[in-house]
Amino acid sequence: MVSRPAEFCPHCGTSLETTAFDGRERERCPTCEDVVWHNPVPCASVAVVDRSGETPAVLCVERAVPPGVGDWTIPGGHMEIGEDPETAAVRELEEETGVVVDPGALELLDATTMPPRDGKHVLTVHYVADRADATGEPTAGSDASAARFWSPAEFDASEKTFRPIHEQRFRNAAVWFE
Image 1 (cartoon, rainbow, N blue to C red):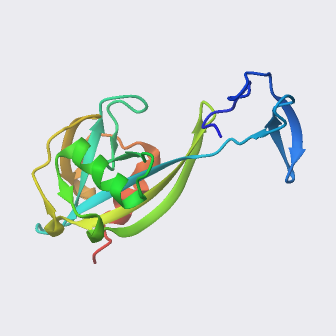
Image 2 (image 1 turned 180 degrees about the horizontal axis):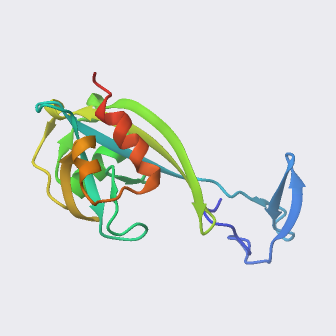
């Protein structure tokens, strides 16, 4: 199994050939006779919503690493081996913002795929959590150059940009608890 299209068998290094299998064209090793599965990479994110002000605000991060350096997103990232999506989402939240929430406080917001980039397909499980269930103050961490709460109106009035794939999650999270 690979996360990007393979040209060579990951087991023996033989050049792959295309074959029809299960109604799709797939890459197969003629030596091992195995299909090399090209699967999406699982990711998880969590939108923390602060409802203490006049309008709800969602915790976001400004990306400090590619792709999308300078764009704003919901905190999240790749799941690790042995992690369930909730655990990955709260780990990424803490790494990127310093804010901590118990996985049991998460509610499912959405699950999406994003357009492939360099042949890599991503499936993200998105969660939402109430700020009242979280601890810590937002501080830019690992992949972030900034972390803060934004209301949709504040964001719209700024000159900042969202990564297109994250903006709808941001807006959906802002009204989640209404």
